[in-house]
Image (cartoon, rainbow, N blue to C red):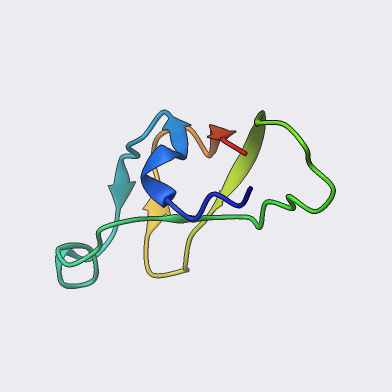
Length: 71
């Protein structure tokens, strides 16, 4: 069964402290991670994955997050 509800995906930490120009950050709602490959996965899993961020700002807190992917 395919789970398309992204609300069930959990990240820890689920927030990051970033530094950069206010004009670039005030509308920012999320930071992307590297791609998570779920091909062939049959069970839910956790993975530590790097955050991806643009050169317009800098992550001032932890640069990775632990992600739980429910399947």
